[in-house]
Structure formats: C-alpha cells, structure tokens
Amino acid sequence: NGLFDSHYEIASAIAIVRGPSGAVYGANAIHGVINVLTPAPGEDPSRLFEMSGDTQDRYKWKGTVSGVHERQGFFIGASAVSEAGYRRDAGLDQQKLTLRHVVDGDGVALDTIFSFDNLEQETAGFIFGADVLHDRERRKDNAYPMAYRDGKSARLQSTLTLDLAGGTQVKITPYARWNRLEFPQHFLPSNALEENGHWSVGVQSLAWRELAGVSVYGGVDAEYTSGWLREFQSQPTIFSYTQGLHYDYEVDAINASGFVGADIKAGAGFTLSGAVRVDGAIYDYKNRTDSGVVGRFLRPDDQTDSFVTASPKFSVRYEPRENVTLHASYARGARPPQTTDLYRLQINQTGAQARPETIDAFELSTRVRAGDWLNLTLAGFYMNKNNFFFRDADGFNVSNGKTRHVGVEADIRMALHDTLTLSSAVTYAEHTYRFDRITGSSSETITSGDDVDTAPRVLANTRLEWRPVDALTAEAEWVSVGRYFTDAANAHEYGGHNLLNLRAQAALTGSLAAFVSIRNVTNAFYAERADFAFGNDRYFPGETRTFAFGIRNAH
Image (cartoon, rainbow, N blue to C red; front, side, top):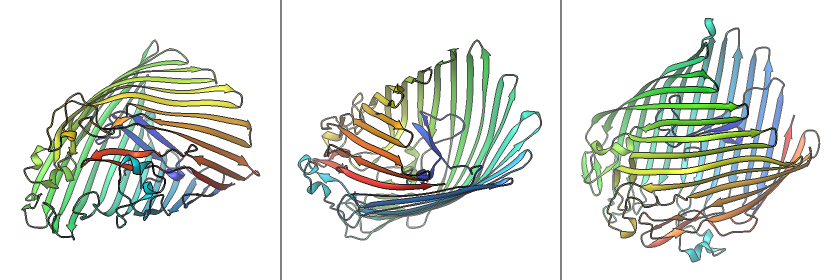
C-alpha cells in the first residue's frame, strides 16, 4: 500500500536500506526504507516507449523523454496500466506522471520534481478453504464484487544545492504533498465507507563537509500537515457495527526534526560512523461530530498530543584488504503513534494507551568480492521491537505488542561462465511474539515465543541469466516462500510455495527490442497471502500461469 503511488515503473533505481534507517530518513522507518529514485536528465536527448500485455488481460505502457540544453535538463515520464483482473469483478486502472527539471549553475543547482498518481481499483477479498484455493475456477471467485479503492496523490519538491567555501555543501528541499483515498471496508461486517485525505508542506535540509578524514553532516526538517478521516456505514446495524456515522475528524500536525552525524576514517582500514536524530510531533485533533460511544466506536473529545523520539545509529566498518569489508552496527528505529492509533478508537480504549513504537537492531555483516566473478554479502541481525500497535482478532487495538526478529541473510552474484550469471538472495529469520494476550478465539491467543503469524522463516529468490550474444538475454527465476503459521496461536499453517518464472529479451534493431515472459511456469495454485480467521482458512490466491509479451523502442 505504501508503494502504489510511487512511480517505480520509470525509476532509475530502487534503493533498499535494511533495518532502521538511522538519522537521515527519520521516523517511521522501522524495518527498512525503500527509496524510489527518479531518473535524472541524460546528457544526450533520449526517448523510450514500451508497451506490453499478458494473458490475464493486463496491459501496460510507459514512455520517457529526456534532454539537456546548455545548463538546463528535463525528464518526462508517464505510465499506465489497465487490467481486467485475475479474480472475478476485480480490476485496476492506474496512471502516473513524473516531471523533472534541473538547472545547474556555478556552485548552485536547482532540481525540481513533480509527480501525480491516479488509482481506480476494484478489489477482491479472501477465498475460503484449501479446496477452493486448489480449484482452477473457484479460486477466482470474489465474494465482494462492490469492493473498490480509489486514490489520488500529487507531490512537488525542489532541491536547492549550494557549494560553499571550504568544501561545504548544503541542500534545502521545500516540498508539498496532497493525497485522497476512499474505500469500503469489505473486510469488516459493517462494509463502512472510509474516506481520508491530507495535504502538507515542509522543508528538508542537509549540510555536509569533509575535514581531514572526517565527514560531518547535519540538518533540520519541518512539516505542517492537515488531514481528515470520515467513516460511514450505510447498511443496517449488525452486531455492534451501527448504521450511520462512525468517525468524522480532522488533525493538524506539526513535525520537526534535527539530526547530526559523522564518518571518521580511523586508519588501519577502520571507519567509525555515528548519528542521532530527534523527531517531535504535535497533533491537534478536532472531532467534527458528537463525542462519546456509538456502538463499538469511541469518538474522543478534541485534544492535543505530542511525542518525541530519538533514533541513534552507530557502526564500525573494517576493510582488512581491498575486496573484503566487515561491518557491525547498532540502530534504533522509532515510529510515533499514527493519528488513527490515537483517534479512531473503540470502546474501553483511550488514545493515551498508544506510545511511540521502537525497535533496537544489531547487525553483523561481511562483503567479499573476488574479481569480476564473485560478489558475496552475508549478514546476521537481532532486533527487539516494543509498543508494536496492531488490531487483534477481537477487533480491538493493541498498543503494547512486543516482537523479536533474529536471522541471517545471504546475497550472492557469481559469473559461472562468460555468458552465464547466477544471482541469489536468501534469508532465514525467526519472527516471534514476546508478550502474552488472551482473545475471544483460542486460535488467536498470543503466547510469548510463538511465531508471528503470516511471517515465513525462509524467503529466497534465485536467478540464472544467460546472455549468449549482446542482442539476446534469457533468465530463469525461482521464488520460494517458506511455510508460515496463519494464526497467532500457531495452530494452523500455510505450507509455502515455489514459483518458476522465465523471461527473455531480444534486440530486433538498434532501437527496437521485444521481450516475453512466463510467470508461474508450473501453474502452481499458491496463495499470495494466507491466514486463519472465524474458523476458516482464508487466502488471496496468486495468479496461475501467465504469458506476457511486449516491445520497447528507445533512442
């Protein structure tokens, strides 16, 4: 959900920061950061157009134009997708636009990016029972044909870069954001319609300087946000879900942060790094309807809440020789309560129960490179998370959850031959609850030490790429998801799945290329997600074997 309005289709790269992000990215980056990078204008004029279709009635296109004139550069990227949907009465139409303009002067540069996204999605809910999951036709059933999600978002940012005397560089980025989303809560008995939106303006800043082997940096960020949420149930009262208005409120929020850090080359191959960030948030909540209890819903009176979090990060990097790196780090991630944690309450709850969520993470890793034929990264991690906020099986918010995450990861890229390359990423991790909670359902009672439900211990992705000539590339990909428990009590499980995907691309001319793919070659009847609730195994079924074809024209 956090990525559907990011324009990853035309991205120049997608950077992934594992674990708490440290000082630069700020609060909310608990388990990691995904940074979608917009392409910069190319030095030479360029154009690209790509279109594709597949046997699931999914059609995509994207186009980009880029160029530079004297000291100014521009980039335009657009993409769209339209699909009928693998499930019945489910589909998607989405359009995205990104504009970028760069002006580069003597010691000063201005980089402006605008993006817009429009989403119109007909969604589908769970199917019930393993027999339905493994039935070619019934797995396409959709018991919620009226479910949908419509969203729009726009972003504008402009980064001013100044190269000052003494090697100091300063970046100042004012920005503005706007977002609107609505969807019926078909996953609840109420089927209530939720509408929400916000707009915000802010500024980010970063100053950096290197002094005799010491790189120091710091900055201040600030943002003002005005948001709102409304939830209304049209259908008659069912259980404690009452007909009519559930919530209607607005929140004005001010966020301010400061951070500072340094990288020190200590000699003998050692680099020491340290950083700390402090985030402050103030929420001014206003209830736009009657306060009090309505059915299972609690509407708080107008109130103001504030939170402060600190996120330190320290690391040591050692390079005993040129192609070997050892790394050790500690980082704390923090997430202040979200406004829905505080103000979309239910009976017997108060917003005062919510506290900032924190995670303390320790990591050891090594990276080895052997010429051009081997790149290997091994990492081990240990994380403790506190004040984890979630909704339990009884439908009530829980604000004091605790989990532990311990595991190892391996990432390898190996040249087996001049034309053959093997790449693989594998992780084994134990994600466990570290607290107890009794619920009305024995299968959802949480016991300390049990696995977190829907959290597989094993994830793997392996790719074998064959390039016999420059004009032809073929790839086989194996995706593995290990078994996992589907309820909190670890009484039911999903057995996991293995998928085989094939891809190939051929250059037809100097500017024209064609590509084909077969996803889920073995036609496995797998689940994108599985869980157990209300006495039933529930699944979001994955797509069966899918053939795709596309062409790309680039100048």
